[in-house]
Image 1 (cartoon, rainbow, N blue to C red):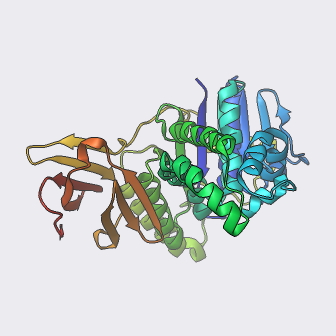
Image 2 (image 1 turned 180 degrees about the horizontal axis):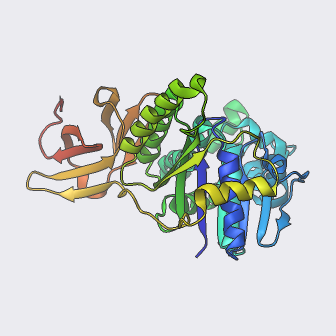
Image 3 (image 1 turned 30 degrees about the vertical axis):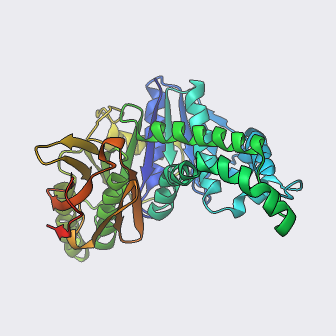
Length: 394
């Protein structure tokens, strides 16, 4: 089974170079490898010093590179989804693939659908994804689950609503409601999203790797990135600390920076204790060209099994207790005071900062309410009982 490795981190920390080094190492191991960029500011062509087209290109034996253009992918690979959209949207006869991009998140969706399609084809042993900076990557990865959640709420009442409202909407508002065929098309998209979700969250298939540098602001964003990735149930199984200054640099000017780097490296190692951590030295030149990529592999990745599967955290789980049921959600690095939790119908909503996640409750818990919630050792434990909803938040 082919595996997917997703590299994320703050902009400018060296994600592309590290992803490229992994792709190079994988290809040299004899594995058919695809290096993909989902960042619209593509720079894989710069690293390998060649101009790339919008299609997959081979740059060396066993290594292909693909800088995804979502609009082009939509037009050439997902014409059926355009057809679905035309069936759904009244007056959409002139809808072009580029118009899909006006819907927030759709460009990210097409990038993910293309990666899933390539994975399903079995062409590659390893797919290595160079993602956009942290915030965009989070939007990219959580979008399928969010869209699936909204679509799930439309069924089965969606079909009933269309049947009842269609005559009224057409006569009063001159709006053509989606017909039965369009609703069936929506279900097909929903199934694609469900498959995509499972692929991205499958510990045996997909790994998320975070790239950081030992600087205060970057370290703080790295911790938040780790927290959010766990909130959305993605398996982070590696940390890369890039641009580490050598201790024997022989220049008093850098002594303070070396001391600060040691401090922040300690913070990162403590935060990511239990995960594989890779330390990458600072280079005095830009990492461009095969020779420099090979140099990075030799210095930091050479003898290490960087492609091993590490299921570092469990998925959220429901456990039966004497009092009811407990939902356990891994959220490392969170501040207890920043966690907002509430029950909304058949969902538990967890909100931290600008991000929130809706976790659907199983039928067993439909008649139960949240009695209390506690956050300890990086894990949020939510107790459900038959008692009235409480307000205790430990």
